[in-house]
Amino acid sequence: MNNVAQRRLAAIVVADVAGYSRLMERDELGTHARVKEILGRIIEPGVAMHRGRLVNVAGDGLLMEFDSAASALRCSIDVQRTMLLENRSQSDDSRIEFRFGINLGDIIVDGNDIAGDGINVASRVQTLAEPGGICVSAAVRDQVHGGLDVRFVDIGERHVKNIARAIRIYRIDMAARRCRNVGARLGPRARWRLAAGAFVTCAVVGVGPASFNPQAAATEEITEPSLMSVAILPFMPRDGIDRTVAQRLSQDVTTAVQRAVRPAHVVSHGLAAKFAVDGASDPRRARGGLNVRYVVEGDLDRVNDAIDVRVRLIDTANGAQLWSDRVSTTSPSPQSDDQNVARLANHISDAIGRAEARRVMQLPMSTAGSLERVLRANASWHLDGSLAGTLAARALYDEALTLDPRSAAALIGKAYTLHMQLVDDPNADRDGIVKDMDDLSKRAVRADPSHPLAWLLRGNALSLQGRRKEAFEANGLALQLDPYMVSALQDQAALLTAMGKPAEALPLLDQARSLDSPGERMHSTLLYACRAHIALGNYSAAIDACEKAEALGLDWWFLDFVLTAAYAQNGDMAKASEHKAALLRKRPDMSIERFRRLKASDDPTYLAQTELHLIEGLRKAGLHEQ
Image 1 (tube, rainbow, N blue to C red):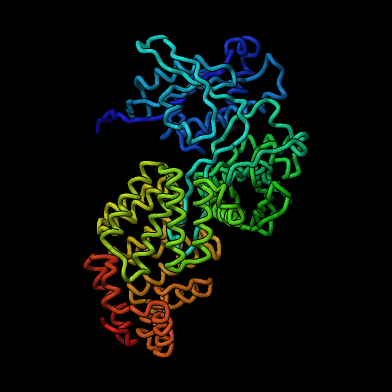
Image 2 (cartoon, rainbow, N blue to C red):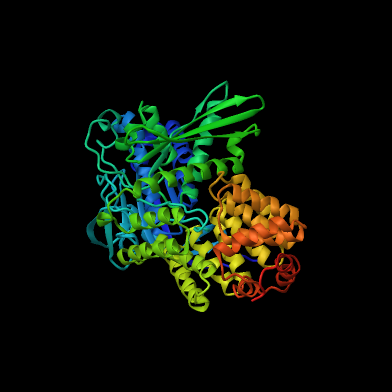
C-alpha cells in the first residue's frame, strides 16, 4: 500500500545549539556526548510531556511538531528554563544554549517525515532568537495571546532568507517570572454528580537568572503561584533499590501526572531534579524556586518481593503534609509498569484536586476569575449533588463563561450539569438539553482539541442523540490522549452496556477500579458494574457491586432503582421493598414508564436485556407502571 501524503495544521518548533561549530572545534567528542545526553534527559521527555513529537535530529538541529501553539510554547519555555539551570555550573565558553523558533502553519505529512512552508518559516524565525531564547511568528502569538501568561516583545516585520513575504516576529521575554493570569481550562471528571475533579492550567513561564535561588527563595517576597501548579521531586531509593529505578519512576510519574491533572502546570522532571540537587530540601523553597503551589515527595522501599512507593503531597506555603499514600507493586521494574504509574498519578491528581478545591472555597467571590469560579462550582457541586446543587453549579459555570467564553473547563462543567438535570429532573426538556449539550461539546473540542475530557463530553453528547458509534469513536480519542483515564474507561463501559454488550464492559470497569483511588470515582465504577451485571442476569454480582458503591457513600436514586430490581429477581423481596421505598423518597415520580422516557438507548439488544432483567424485577417489586 502506498503512503499518501496529507496536509494538516501544526505548531512547528525548530531549535539549534548556539555556537555549535565553536563548541565542536573546542571539544568534539565531549560536545557531541553532552548534546546527546541533554536530548535524552531533557528534550525528549519534555516533548513527550507536552504531547509533541521529535521528528528529526541532525547534528545540532532539532525539528519538533505539536498539536497546538500553546503546547509548543510551553515545551520550549520549559526546556529553556531547565537549560538555564544546567548552565549555571558551566563556564561561559562551554555552555550548551539552544535557540528556539516556533511557527503555526500548514505542513505535509509523509510517513514519519514532515515538510512544507510552515517548517521553512519556523527555521527562519529560529535564526532570530538569541542563545537561550525563543522567537515566534505572529501566528503563534495570535493563537496563544491571552491564554498563557507570557510576555511577547514585538521585534517587527523581518524579511528572511527564501521567504518572499515579510514575517512579524515576537521574542518571548524570558525574564517574565510570575504566573499572574491563570489559564482557563479545567477538566472535571466525567461523572460530576458522583465525584467532581478540579484540574487547571497555568503557562510555564520563563525565569530570569536570579529567579532560581533556593537560598533567596525562602525570604524573598513571592507572588502567588498558579492554580494546581506542582513539582514531582525525584523519589528517594531505599533498601538497596537502584537509584536509576527511582529516578525513572519519578520521571514517569511526572509525565503521567501531567496527563492526569490535565492540563495543569507540572514542572518538568529535569527542572525538579536540578532544584533538588541544588540542596532545596525544604519544600517551602519550591514556592520561590519553582513557583509552584504543591510538591510531591516520594521514596521506594523493598518489602519482600514487592516495591512500596510512598508519596506525600506538601503545601509549599507552609510545608504542611496534605496527603500521603502507598502503592505496592510486585513488578521488578516499576518504571516499566504503566498501570502502576498511572494509578499513582491518578491518586496524586485526586489529592491535588481536593486540596485546591478546599482552598478555592475560601476565596472571596468578588475577586474570583473565570477559573476560580469553575473550581468553586466543582467543589460546591461535589458537596451538594441535588438538583438545586446542580443548578447552582451551572450558574457559576455561566459566570465563568461570561469572563472567558472559550473556557473548556466551564463548557465541560456546564454540559455535565445539563446531563445530570436530564437524569434527575422529571420536567427537564430533553430535546433542548440534548441540543445544548451538542453545542457545548463542540465548543469544548474547538477550544482545546487535545483535552481528553472535551472528547469524553463529545461522546456523551453523541450518545444522547443515539449516535453511539460516533460516541464510541469520540471516547476512543479521549483514551488515546490518556490511556489510563478512569472516567473514559467508565464511559466506554457505559456505552458498551447501552449497545447491548455488557460482558465487554466489565473488563474495562475492572481496569478502572485498579487505577482508581478508593472513594473518588470508585462508587461510580461500581454502579456501572452493577448495571452491566443486571443486564447479564447476574443478580448477585449486581447486588454486590451496588452495595459496595452504597458503602462508599453513593446516595443516588438510580442505585436504589437497580437494587430494587436485582433483589426482587434474586428472591429477596424484603430488601427489594426497602430499596423501592428509598427510591420513591428520592424520586416520588419514578415509574417504569418514566424510566423508559429517559431513552438511555434504543439498541434492540439493550432494550431486550433491560425488559428481561431490570424492568421485570421492578414489576416483581411492585413499582408503578405509569
